[in-house]
Length: 373
Image 1 (cartoon, rainbow, N blue to C red):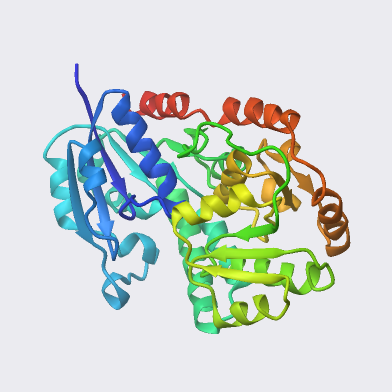
Image 2: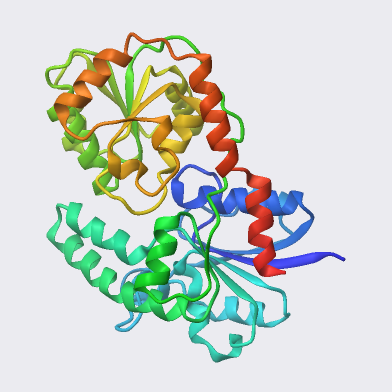
């Protein structure tokens, strides 16, 4: 029997060039390989139709996301209200196939009583109310701070409402506890993130620089990069590269103030992976404990030594694979030790054991499908 499902995505999930679409694309690809026929619905606000999605989906539909005041609603979060679309609802109602909602962003249909008896599962990438609260804390713009705080408050109520109606599949045990204990979800389970890499390809030996990478257009990531420049590498004359999308003019100035630091702006996927594999140390502190840090997983699968703080590995099985320090002086000492320490076979073996145990795409896709059929 052919199993067919609807998947609703908050964005066009290809190319996989930022964390918000990686799990979606890998879920679609793996479910397709396991024999599912997928009807994909995605909101397009700039990425455009993708032939790669047509190859692995039975059908693909694109919907315009409402922008600005058109997507505003007093009682719904903007990330939800701006993705309300009557054409999407009518297409979903045309049959009885199960629906996988990729992110709380796509859950507007839960406000429609016509879906009351439908099999619907929510894939929660984050506790979004907590995530937006963290964005509020790290944002420098007053206008954006007001928006993030307001959105966080709306999301808190809205997430609790949706979680009372649907099974929820979180990426981490921390998020599972939040949905269960704080939001009152009764049917919530952890299914780890699906990833584009399934083999550890880290190279043995020595790399030639330290690296921080991330979407630099996000305030938290810019703050981490600036902190490393101003607090860690200001007196540590070891080559340091920052790479990422949409860096600010301020960060570019900071990165080029020292002769041993530089910034690679908007690298492509191949260029970024090349930087990760050639670095001696991937340094990835986080100022946000929410969610799973996909850039850290990328570094663990493909890079050498990793230095993080506790927030980057909190609630994950990744702590034993990293060197953990909080303040500049201990981080500087770790860098000085690890920069001249060849990365070896034993470290690779430990990574393979832990990463394969938790991040097996086939097993995790089967877990997702078990809640749909």
